[in-house]
Image (cartoon, rainbow, N blue to C red; front, side, top):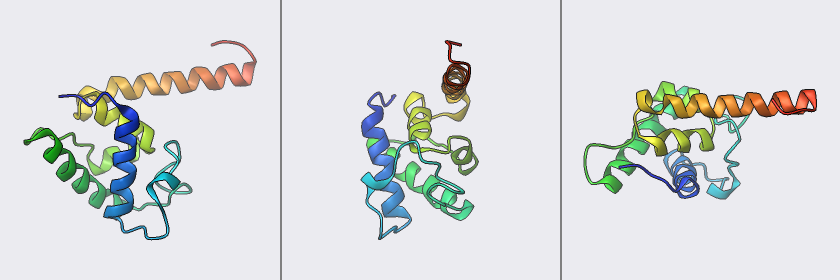
Amino acid sequence: MQFHDLKWLEQEIRLLIVETLKLEDLEADDIDPDMPLFGGGLGLSSVNALALDAALVRHFAGLRGGDSAPRAGSVDLFRYSTVRLLAEHLGDSGSPEQAMPVARDVGARRRAALLEKNNGRKA
């Protein structure tokens, strides 16, 4: 089963971030889908990544009705380090190995956009 509505998936991830990590001063809608989750963005830590990974598995296992929950893995949360990238990753297949082409495509689109911006022409 795949999740095709990325906007819905982004919102679910933002809600899980706020609820799981008990971010009382933050609403889910305050989290920009393109804001880095770690470091200078939202400022999450590796401990937060572990908690978020567990919450993602529990949440999506219930929605899928079984053990086939999408799993990012705490290390993958650093690779797919924004809500949007994580939603694209989980929405594609739920499997890091199968979702890697999506991540590469996103990276290619970003590089092309940067080249276009910096060179003033299409890449």
